[in-house]
Image 1 (tube, rainbow, N blue to C red):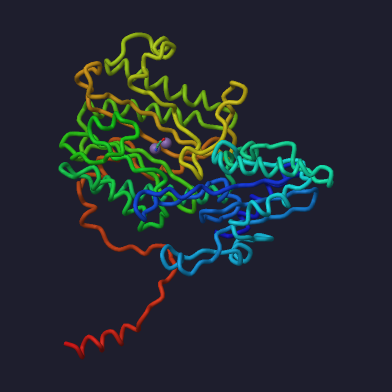
Image 2: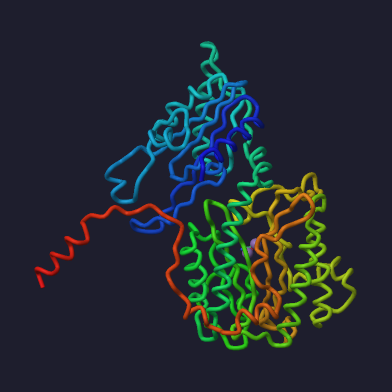
Length: 469
Ligand code: GLY
Ligand code: MN
Ligand code: MN
């Protein structure tokens, strides 16, 4: 990604902040066990302003009128550690490759902080995330106030920079949309593969692996969240990630998955029959969910509120629940009393971006916020019939969610994931040759990565082999 994307974001952030100093800190590394860490992913706010994804990083932005400074505190180069876990940018790389005006070893952060904060009117710091770090910053400010007779003072105000940054994040730039579209295209291809790979008798985990295999070979850097592959009644568990059951013949399987590429996410759900053909009842339930999704998507446009989009989908789902015999009564009063909640217990969707459940307000002063061009929202209604005594018998074990990623445009909307089939007929057509994916797997050319250096010329290795044989 070009670094000016990050420089542009820093400029926009600095333009919006008042004079002072902003500090952003990376997430800590979490140990899994032994010498093994959980896969690392840094703080999205820090990344979006810097492009820097290493742990133990602090980014500092200083603004004083027209004067601006960008300082990175990073892990220093360390040949031994780099031998074990890979290259570091170091302070030189932070300046050369990431545009910092100054860069220091992160171990020096608290030595340099008083100098950065002296006589600054305010500090912007994300609080509530790392209280030990925040406590040390507070003590540094307090120590500065003790130097008043020398003419020194620390900031009087601490402001959470997310009050600025999250407003920036909720409305995507053209560049952000392009990166989300890349993640969506990878995810669409992976879902097509899964639909063509699925067959009764497979394990949910095996099908999830097909999705993630396609993510990886098409250039995803990681999953945006743990892949959900839920067959039969497992689909009634909204974030089911055990993925260890066998796909039953005649069951539906719900996959909810998303690729992450360049720190931007996709998030798609599709539900399809493991054997390629919906039963008449599955089809009926499915078509109610689809109708609800279409109604909610049609409601997406600038000026409409998030609440109105939710209501558009909910209204159809409740009509469906009455039609299917799961509820009795007038849809309006079933909505008012919340009687539908055992079968639809979440909201219509969420902002999508760097985080799969992306940041940004949904309500301001109690009022649902209006949609604006550039927002990206998932639309994901579902009906979930748990295998439980309270569920009407015929419907037990059917769980359906249909989820697409929708960009709000000047005139209305664009569904970024519309290339993926979702009508019953289109899904059945795609699955007509059930299991076909397994016959079509071939290496594809992934976007060029870094070339590993060769240690020996292949001809030499060949000759050596000949001699010894
Ligand atoms: N993938 C989680 C969700 O759809 O919200
Ligand atoms: Mn979602
Ligand atoms: Mn999802």
